[in-house]
Length: 116
Length: 114
Image (cartoon, rainbow over all chains, first blue to last red; front, side, top):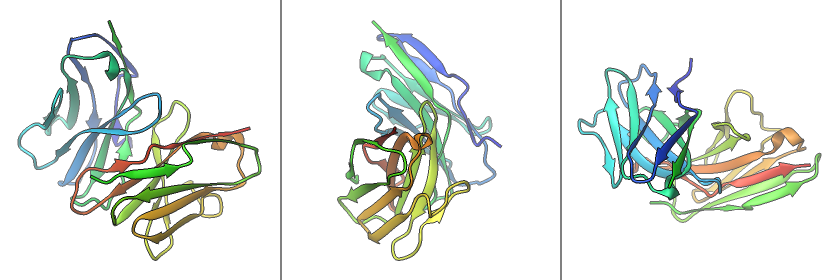
C-alpha cells in the first residue's frame, strides 16, 4: 500500500502568489513524523518543514507552512509569496515511530514551476 | 544541524566497473541511510548503515551489489558494484539522530553508467 501519496505531478503558480502542494499518508502508528523536502535541479535534498503527529499546532518555517489534518491524514505544504527560486521538485515524506532511527518513506513528488 | 559531505558529486562510469561513494558527517550520528533516486523517480532506501555491524538492506537490494561500510559514527561508504546503465541514479546519504527530528541529506552523487 502506498504510504505517501502526492497526486499532483506538476503545479504552476505565478510569482508572489500562494500555492498548496498536496500530501496524504497512510499509517497505523500513533507516533510519526511528516517532512517536506525541496529538490532543485542540482539534486540535493533541502529540508523545509517538519510536523510531528502529536504537534497540535501546524508547523511554520518562514514562507512555508504545513496544513496538518490528522483525521484526514493529510499534510499539505503551503508556500506563500512564491518566488522564482521556488521552482523545484517537492517531496513529502513520513517517518514512522518517535525516534530518528526509522527510515523516511517518500512520495512521488510534485514539480513546481513559478512563472514571472 | 549536521553537515554532510558526500563525494564524488557526480561521475560517469563504464559498465562492469564499481564506484565507491563516501559520506562524511561533521558530528557523530547514530543512523546513516543510503537512498537511490532513479531518473524522474522518488527516493528509495537502499540500506541502513549500522556502526559496528552489517548494514540492513531493504527488499530488492543486496550486499553483493551495494556493499556498505560504517567504520565509525561519522563516516560511511556505499559501493555500486558491477555497474550497468540501470544503476544510473542519484545516490544520497542521510543521517538522523535520536535528538533531532530532521533527517539531513548529503548533496548527492549523480552517477551515469555508459
